Image 1 (tube, rainbow, N blue to C red):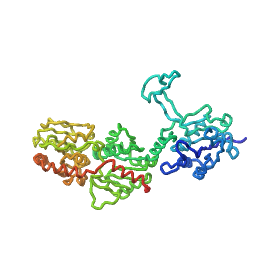
Image 2: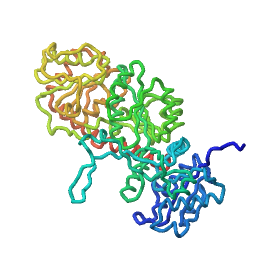
Image 3: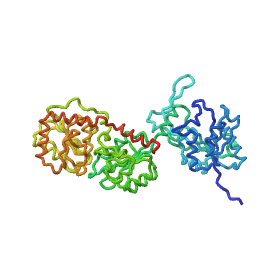
Length: 553
């Protein structure tokens, strides 16, 4: 007895030369590649040339397809405008039977105008047929509040209750991207659709079928969309700055397929918990081996590393699974192997071409792109801001409050404690000061804008204050911050060094000096604004993407 074998799968790609909506549509280049080649390149990953048939009446389409598929020369009858795809499928099925096909075989019609269909979706469709369906077709969720018009011209809703779209009964629309059936069923019934029908739901991207120039514009958007990974953590020791910067980058890059990857083990839970509620794709990892596995599976076009100093081994491991690596605030040996290094907190007299230094390359929260400096600061000083980062590990806020108490500052004090502040809660009353204490700030730029003078640590908050022209005194949290060249006099900053070594009286004297010296405050403001005049998140990100989109990557 002959053993029963699985039916062979044949892929039919119908591609006429004529197209009224978009002339020469099937050979028009989408992101530099002829449209029909997108599906051919994808299918060739899983299916051999003999299994793929391009049915066409056009010699140019045949020439473009011949490397990946058998060519079926379409008859005049099936190439007419009134011919249906069922007609084409019938003609090709009979053609296949005259070659090596069997009636029990599967035939899948795949449209060349659906360039984002994946082999995974094709394989799911085949599996549904093998499991008992007579036909399979791709669909997308198409729930909407729909209406019709009755014969007498009255509008009639096609829903029973007005609710949010996601609560409407599930309805689908065909994409036309894939319709599959068995050859014998097609020959017997003259149609590719026979019950039982299996619906294969796919994403809006995969379901895109190009029929108009508006569809083409959508396809161009999807084709240019890159897979991007941002790697950043936050902890009481590390602070919140890297996660804040990841959010700022995500805001600029979110039109792409973006993932933020963060550690969630031990103290790193601070960053993971902070990111959880945000409208971005967040991937939590327990260790770096999990990150490398994630990279291997995703194969992104761009990886942004915001993990401070890297090693050669670390960057090389990342580069194995991505096209371009950007490393931020990286003074490690791994920086030599990154494609772009951005060190906005430092300067270098002789930087490499791919090393971008200085505050003009600082990536800040999006609010600092829209909030402008006040025309004039108050004189005398009406408001002092204290903001020592997301965690303030040295509790410099308490030292600054003690100094303001010693100065007997009578006006408004704004204190910002970040989400990682773990010291005893502070009270302005305890220091005899007036003002407000914030533990959650919706718009930091608007809050900073109110200040006439600020005290902060030596991180990126300094640059944020510079964009608003706020004269600033810096107390560094750690030795690394001592190397940050932006927190210095040329940028309108008075840096007192390591905060733990600055006593309260010395700090109070510096505050008093600034309060009493309007000209110094004006000079500091002018230097700060000049330094960041050309800084822009959008410009920095576009410069990065130009590298990713260039032929070098």
